[in-house]
Image 1: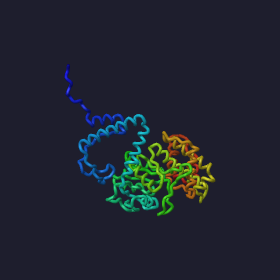
Image 2: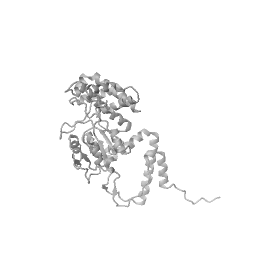
Image 3: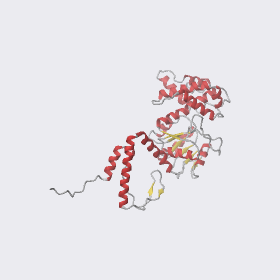
Image 4: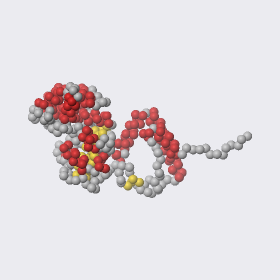
Amino acid sequence: MPRPSTTKPQLLPLCTFAAMLSSWEPRLSFLPTAKPLAGAPQRSLQDSRTVPAAPAMSERATLRYSRFALAATAASCLAAKAHPASASRRVQRLAHDGADETVRAPAVIIGGGRVGEALAAMGSGDDLVVRRGEPFPGSAPSGPIYVCTRNDALKDVIDMTPAERREDLVFIQNGALLPFLEAELGGATKFTVLLVYFAVAKKGDPPLDGKTDTDPDGLSAVGASGKWAGAVATRLKKAGLACRVLEDQEFTKAYWEKNIWIAAYMLVGALSGSGTSVGDVESSHRSEVDDLIKELALAVEGANAGIKWDLDPLCEKLAAYARSVAHFPTAVKEFEWRNGAFYSLTTAAETAGLQDPCPLHTAGLKKIGALPAAA
């Protein structure tokens, strides 16, 4: 009768098993790293502040912990396989709401106007405000850099920001910023864009959120791909303001919605005569502004694959926002950043020998003398 083997079974090394688990679900990878020395300080992945060291564990405790971590990872991987959309949302929350919310690095705020001061008031009191004409500070905090200037100052702000800090820039301006920012910063730079739907009446006043009857949870939004998306949302929410963190396509859609609102309501207001408010446009010129909104939305759809609106609800959504800021004056200004974005669709079509996708918009600009001189 053969004797039982005394050879111990071969166990998979920890890192091999972890790598197998990672191959099941790359988004939930669990690869062990070198264990820090007991009592040694550790550094946060998001900033350079020292955090307390983890308590030392015995070899037995370390083994138990490793087994537990592997089991938990395996369960997460299996759950992700069963419910991939849910797992993806959990990962996004960890990336934007979890990791960034633990970062409390002070911010740099460029521009000391109404919004700049409001953002500083939302912080912990240790933000650094850089005012007009001041250089970028050599000892700037390592957190987000909020750019609270006029659009025509953006290039100067980018130029004065050190190259290694440009991914920390957070832009809050109105208008079609993305083509300019991508040209200046490069498509790989993870700058952050915030669509602001709160208003500050005058310096020192608390911001008023742009919540509406169609969007009672608020309209302000930040692009999830930005480095500081979670930190921006956290700052606003701590101040009682709404802020959605939107993935790329949903953010692009929200970005165009705001630009359509500005271009349509401002142009119809300008066509209606001096002194016309946003509320006047919504209440007395609703048919004209809705027609213009639909025209601009269809033009954007034609130029952006994957973007599609239900036009009547879009008009109502933008009208609801107009009612919430009914006192705002109307004027066609900052053409390059606002109505110019839609006029560029017109010129591109004409260059290609196609019909103008925005004829109402073009005719309105021509009537108030807002077209570029060469047009």
